[in-house]
Image 1 (cartoon, rainbow, N blue to C red):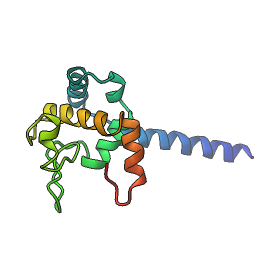
Image 2 (tube, one colour):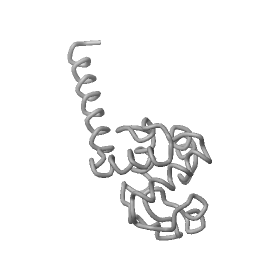
Image 3 (cartoon, rainbow, N blue to C red):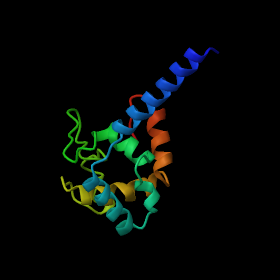
Length: 130
């Protein structure tokens, strides 16, 4: 491979890494809410670490918007819970991201075991859901 090709490959890799970083950029206040919820629920803090599979999942599900509403169902919030799902995980339907994280982390723990498995399941579905 020529030096120019290596340079082009390096630039493309760097650009890809920067795009991934900014695409998953989490507001610090939301990161702190997630960390507090992980502690409240008793799941590892690594679940909510920056760049984790949880953030990839939430970015695709709700674009990190606690008021995200699916136009064709009752799916709502960061985790896109259906109306019937909320009470099963200890929280009423709410736009409070703290309550959403507590319920969402409980859901992921109960259904998938951890965010990596939830993300893998989401990726395998067409259309995507978890």
